[in-house]
Structures are given as C-alpha cells and as structure tokens.
Image (cartoon, rainbow, N blue to C red; front, side, top):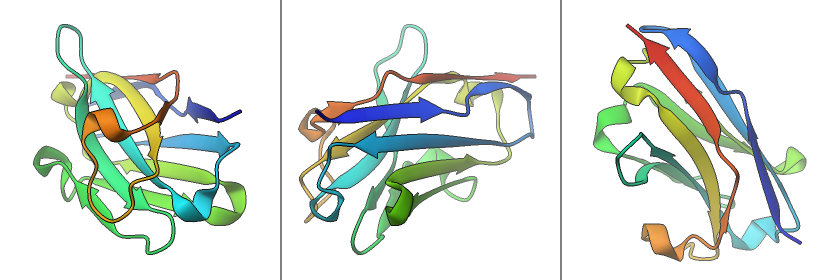
Length: 124
C-alpha cells in the first residue's frame, strides 16, 4: 500500500522559511518521480515543483523559482520542499504526489498517489 505523509507546515511571517517533508512508503522509488502541489481556498490545485528520484532533475513553477528548493533523500524515502522568502500568496494546503512518469514532466492528473496535505499560512 502506497502512503505519502506530509509534515512541516505551519504559520510563518512573510519573508520567513519553512521546510516541508513527504515520507513515502510502498513505492519503487527508483522508478518514480515526486511532485509538490498546492491549493489555496477557492482555487485549483497547482503545480509547485517536481523531482525525479534517479537523476534528481528538478522543475519549478515560475512564481517559486529562486525561493523554493525541492530535494530528496533516497535512503529515507523522503522528499523535501524548502521554502524561503515566503509571501502571503504562498498560503495554501501543500500536497506531495508520486508518479511513474519519469521521462517528462507529468500533468497533474498523471500523478498517481497523493498525500493528505499540510497547511502553510504566511501572514503579512
């Protein structure tokens, strides 16, 4: 059974930092890739960042480039999202997701497994 469990969310002031973690189990990590998404109230879930397990190639949504960093620890089966210089517009529930598509950036619907989400609130 595949499980993705996020942690690390919370309340932070604008300009602050948070690090989200996503612990994965039940996956063949060598054949998968991971992504972070977020969903603000009244908005659709949007892509934030993506990383492939083997090559470690990373991709980011434009608004987070230079502020967020996705990384993974293969030994711990965990993917991280380091978020710096946070802005109020970063406020959302953040989800990690796993996909078997590793040759390109998948669409949102091509991520097979999802975590339960962790709330990030950035105050102004």
